[in-house]
Every structure is written in structure tokens, then in C-alpha cells.
Image 1: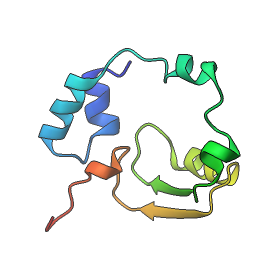
Image 2 (image 1 turned 135 degrees about the vertical axis):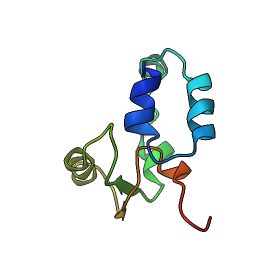
Image 3 (image 1 turned 30 degrees about the horizontal axis):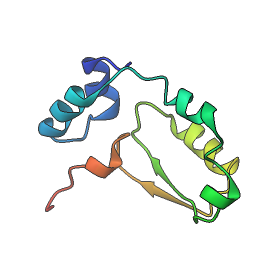
Length: 99
């Protein structure tokens, strides 16, 4: 479980305050959905392998170091890797100038 200070410093450091506030409200205890994954294999060629994988490397991710992100891409069926400079773990909420 991520504590609010950890989330602010490592996951949402480049997001707007409103995004961090909402994220803190939505956090729930989790084991990364391991119970769901244990029920059946969701990662099969039929269910998942038909999608072209593109991995986004976030150079300021406070949760996953860039070396580990690169290791993930090298050890998966990733077809393309994109680097987003100045992105934290929540790249989809990145506040960019003129947006």
C-alpha cells in the first residue's frame, strides 16, 4: 500500500495536485491483483499476445528505475519502446506546458 507522501514524491511528482488528491482517495489495499491472476492465466497468446506491445519508459519514474524498465522491455515481447523525458510513473497525467 502506497502512503500519501510516497505517492506524491515517487508516483505523482509531475502531476497536478487534483490528480494526486483523487489518486489518494482511490487507493485501496491490494496485492497487485494476484488473486485475480491466480484464477486463470490472463496472459496468453489468444488473450494478450495478439496486441502489439509498446512500452513507455519514464525517465523520472520513482517506482521503477529506468534500468528495470529497460530490462522489462528486453525480457518481453515488446515491439517498440518510447522514452518520455520528464515523465513520472503516472505518465498519462503528465502536466505539459501549453496543454
